[in-house]
Image 1 (cartoon, rainbow, N blue to C red):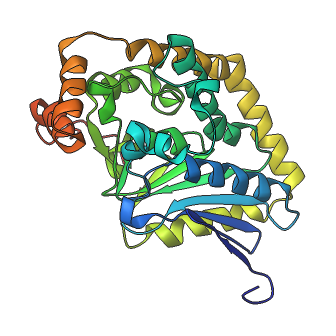
Image 2: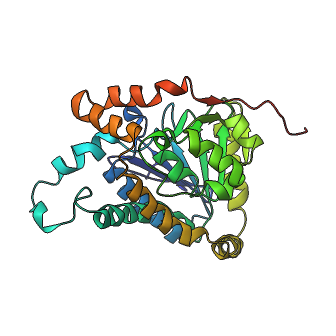
Image 3: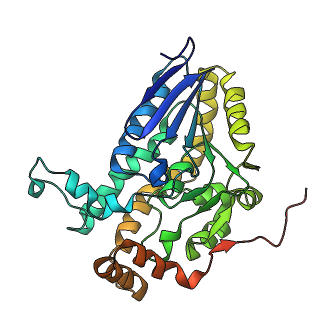
Length: 303
């Protein structure tokens, strides 16, 4: 207990604080750019349930410690780190992601369970983006109810260039079909300011102001009774579900698994680079044809 009215819990990967009706959940691996490991996803999942259960919480603010919100999934974890951590049981008795198509789908669906929980929580979630919000970071951010970003945040899914489609794919519901396709067809990134212009995020603020603006929004929302907030959230989410939002997530996971079977030249080159030269070289070769990969809007919305 820090002081009356505030509760703080730190784990290996996150920090969890409650004050003024707001639970602030912070991804806390700044040395890894808050990359999502299996352990972090479990801790985020549990902290979200904790916040949804507490009577002193009406709103949740999700953020990242340090320079970045989240640079994506921890590829060291994905490409072997998780297997090393699995010692202590017989892996032959359990599914492995690379064994069959169905095993890959199963693992992606279990991964989805960690992020899509955010749609099912009764309390509203605001995601605050600064620095990099890439790949798996967007899976997490776009599962929130409201997303705000620093003007200079870098948002995108570069892995779409050779690795697969987002397994949690809510892009359409944030920015519409044309921009969703534009982002995924190229894996290019967009600034927080331009993301606000296309509706991918709600609003963008100067980097020096994003912390205060996001917390102010969360506190404003928290002034409303939790029961009322829950009705608002669940009614809008039901409208999204009637438009296919939830069913399409299962389809996205299945198609991501199918894309992993691709024998196309770019996917094959990535696998070869990973095996022969390692992750950094594989990423460098994957992204080199796209230059800086940044979308820069020419047409502006009227002020």
